[in-house]
Length: 255
Image (cartoon, rainbow, N blue to C red; front, side, top):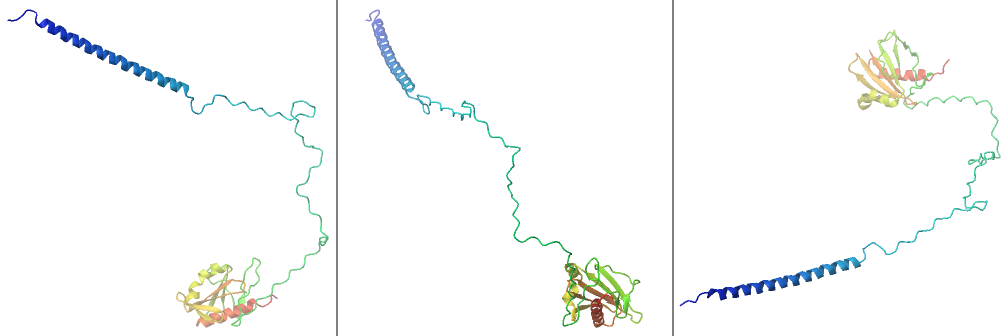
């Protein structure tokens, strides 16, 4: 047997418990909100009370400005800078030295230039000596023994000075090349210097490009390189003999 309205008391109890639970949750939320609000307010108060780093409570006192020096008139205006005296004498930073006790000698005529001593011949024979040349350097003479300068012979134009010699009594012809710069002259005679034969003061070598020819060279006391190029000679000794005669003629005084 069932009673009418028996489910109503049960439903009302459930609603009561749900309401109580919601009330408890609401109270807990209020408590948590209050605690959180208290903590936030407390943190803001601490930050506001703490001083910031790098700041001071009082500003430094301003430094007093330096007072300009008093003028000669007793006022506060600064004294003017002294102006240079245009009419006065200026000090000389570099005074001239006082004359010494020994006066300078009176000007007189220049002494005559002394002639240069002639070159000393070597034991093996005379060296080619510098001849007369207004421009400086050695100039060969116009005649060496029976050989005279022959302008009909073709020039080679190797050296600074060149003279060609021939003789009606000989089939030989000689070309004398003078190199005033020793470094330049050594370039022309480097083959002779390396493989040539020493004959007295001359170093000689046969010339394969000339008919019965050869070359000899020597260096004089002034450093000039004298190169003798020959054709139509018997042997290298004939070129060396011509070179010795050339040196002897160069050492003769000018008449």
